Length: 478
Ligand code: NDP
Image (cartoon, rainbow, N blue to C red; front, side, top):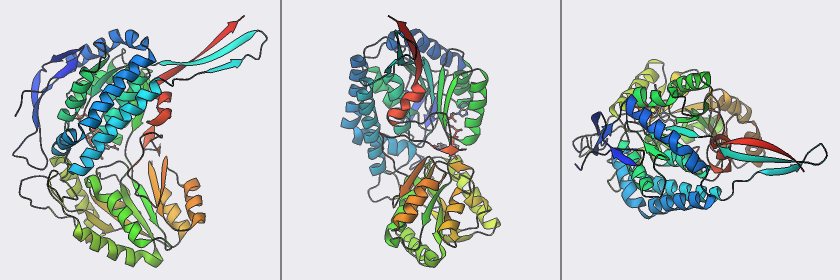
């Protein structure tokens, strides 16, 4: 193993108070890295550095910001294979998925390099004589970024890049499962020409480092992606002290399959949406709602297709489904298999622990026939486990799709323009897919949901400005 990966605080690489080990879920005998774990005082140092540097970066020119972001994006894209291999080893998604994620992270930085040049305002005539009104956007200040483990490059990228593009300073805490990916991003940012303190990496636990970020009066805004329970706590505490907060949390995303759908295509949408990335996507298609007329045919086709899926190490060519990211997540998945069984859901296929050449957290994707009230059909599992629900007709399918506490993404497979158009209007979700998997989005348009899935302004695309800037209205009398 190489040297211990350090934290990046105020332009310097710093050791932590303890050392942690990052596991390789495909091969538990070959850990990825050792990393410096920070504690609360060290997190406070990083926050203080970001606060001291905020004014300098807020005053930087759009060109300087664009140059920094373009440097970072270009390097990530150029190194996508190498970074993808690191991501595959640390998080467990398959190498093609990991390379695609690395490339996307680079594209996000390049997109926001352009946005830094396009920070626009409005100039209007006043309703009163001889007065002009200007509406401009200014940075919020210090942004704390608390990221999950399932997209260790893309999610930090879509938070860090707009934060810097709009002139904020950043303290970034990766999830403890993926410190090496966080470090790799920080290492590139450390060579990008940012002034010391504008970007800081603090690896450590949510309870210590994350909590210090939530508590600090120097942190003006918190962008969080993760579980609903942690998100609710972050929101409560951040709102109580008046910090701006943005949360992306879970999903229980429906994919509706109507009787007029191209069934082969619907099966591919369901397989991809439910099981790729080992089902560890907040946009995963975990409720597949099928119209009765094609239910049995669809389920039989899913079973056949699932038998072809190869579960294996993330770096092995031909693996379709990598390992589950952690032992804790595997245990959560297994507990849901038991819950589904106990509640009377019928297992169609999968749900077995899989032995591979190396010891890791492997399981085969599982599909259940379930009823809407069963927990396997209601709760976010965050693993390769999906439930099929039967619907009488389109109206029933739409009602089932909306019968959830969540509202991140909703999909429909149909050849009917009428039903596709109606679904786009009436699905209670922030994102809607027609004849596509619920997972898999573009990086230049808004991402986010409704109900328990999200809180605060949308992420990504030009809509990111809503969170990462504050608006000022200025009046001038000639
Ligand atoms: P968490 O919500 O616990 O973690 C997300 C981030 O928050 C991590 O960086 C974590 O740090 C941090 N965190 C944890 N506790 C606190 C705290 N008290 N204060 C501040 N920050 C904190 O999710 P997990 O990663 O543990 O995953 C658990 C479940 O969350 C999954 O099984 C899944 O259901 C869901 N999830 C949903 C995601 C989504 O995109 N919708 C993404 C990831 C998970 P640390 O690494 O130290 O825990």
